Length: 476
Image 1 (cartoon, rainbow, N blue to C red):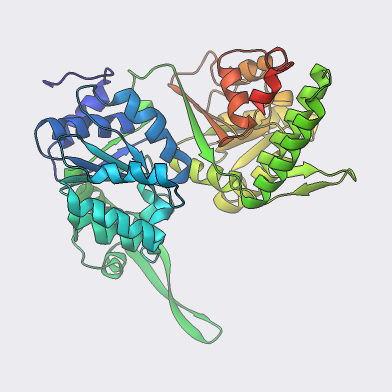
Image 2: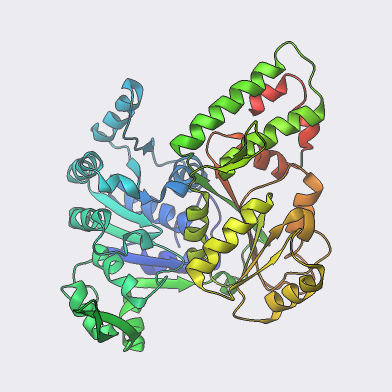
């Protein structure tokens, strides 16, 4: 393509751009790790250079909205495009309001607004987005578009109602069908009304779902018992979509590192602040040993994972967003996944949530409480049994010596502080027999010790040495 990229595209990314760049609507059905964000950003720059757009509205889940703002756009948007992306915030001060106001200033700059999908469940968020769309020739993109699959959800209705005001529309997701083919209807409806040939979700359901009448408490209801005409549906998607899996992209780097950000709940934030204050209070005017420092960090990280040990020695749970983020993430990933947690308590939570979501027999475990006589069998089942998608364990127990090459994706639900355990655990999928590009994903709480730990591990820093003395303040 006659275009000077800021970061070199891979062959599959070029193909996606060639198919889509000037289309009014398009779907990037590209698996996580294949670089769909870069494709969208290059598409935006091409449309801007050709005078087609001067505004961009990107809608993304909370876990990735800051990644667009802090990483994706600065990394991939070509330097000659003048822009200052603005991240939507519902609760703002005067400085933030001035940033929002820049979105409506005249001139030649590309105006980029990034909003989390939950904002469209609010009147304030909806009205601001509508005003932005009215003021510009806009490309409107929904990242992880399965967040608008539910036709009854308020955010789905609101986002789809705004779509006609955008000159260009894009959806991005690695798994457009999470639980049923019916997930496609509203995602495609956002791109173009009646794009799949149906004016309502219910007529679409009648065509592609097999319905049966069931009686519950004397009331007759229609329930879905199967699906039909799926080849026809697949053919309808082809003219406006591009599908690629990580396994198909032989030109990808051997390893890709990603992160998913979650917010502390109000209960977590309260306890975290109390523990942080205590840690800093203990530090002032005193020498602290490495063991003491790591204990403080351990307590803070336990809180970010949703539990803490009180003075009475009893461990209590705290409402948190980590599990729900993990489940959302797993729906986006094709194939098998290795999941590491630092705490045994978290392993139990993860297993319970995954079994509830994906069914019995979908996972095996490998941690301190896994019986010795079951461990090798669990590895064998994960490697050989297609029904077993998830391997869940701790790096302390499973991070050494075992082979898990049936998976090419590894998720760190929580991290420890031991650099060797991190490196060794990463190598469980990076062994002889691995033929696919590998993706490593860290789940972390924003503005907490989680971020510091992951950053240190990725830079191969010895945490215990790094945080001694006055540097502890910066870490906490």
